Length: 318
Image (cartoon, rainbow, N blue to C red; front, side, top):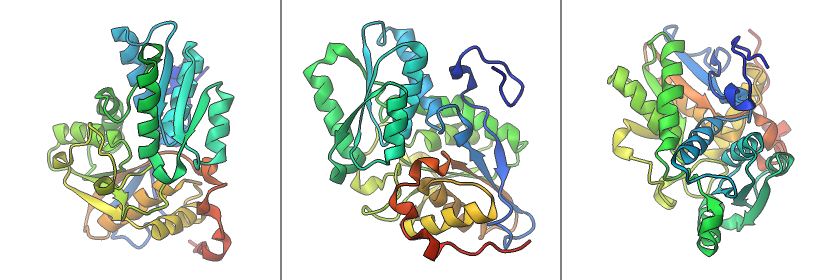
């Protein structure tokens, strides 16, 4: 199997990372000439999302320590993408996988998880990702010796994956010109780990987290920290700030990205792009980098696309 960047892989797991960085030129056309906005396209990972990186790193650490060994089942809570990544990794390594996820996650994600041979356990949809976390804890408590829990919300291997891969890739791909980095917060691993690396190589880089504007939102995969169980790996004092993203504006940005950039993305990427434009619009010069954590094919059955024809903007000609 030959990677797009020319590297050969002996396993699908060898294909994780080294995703492309794309300059956004459609939705940014009104920005000053010396301001550039870039999106790292994590949908090019083999499992289809940024979560391939921490999921693989956490499993590798479990194998290294012996916490994951033959006879154990990988179990974790997820809103979808980490579950898909763990299901893929479990299939590649020969480990069974069980995943606790809110019952209202998109049907596409449930089917992808099933296609990898993993078992989905549904939690109360009204409790969101926090409900999945709590149910996962109950299941493990009943039979702790049966499971290996990567524990994406508390495992330091989650941000470490981004410190070791995502951050260096962005630094290299921008040739060190990045001035601002934004990422949505779910587990917070992406913004924490990537931000730490970028701050290490250039402390002047601004690291910003994108979160839903309020507790009642439609941005799947993102957490409103003040109203949620805060991940142990999240350290807000390391950030230069947060950008609250409203759901409707994030949805509208998804439609614009499709029509002006030729990319189909999900709602969290819409929020990230909206936030990146808010930051970029205040600059005279700079390189703003954000994360498009996946592509949008897993969200076509969600509210994101309910009535979208009436709201989607008409593409502007060049």
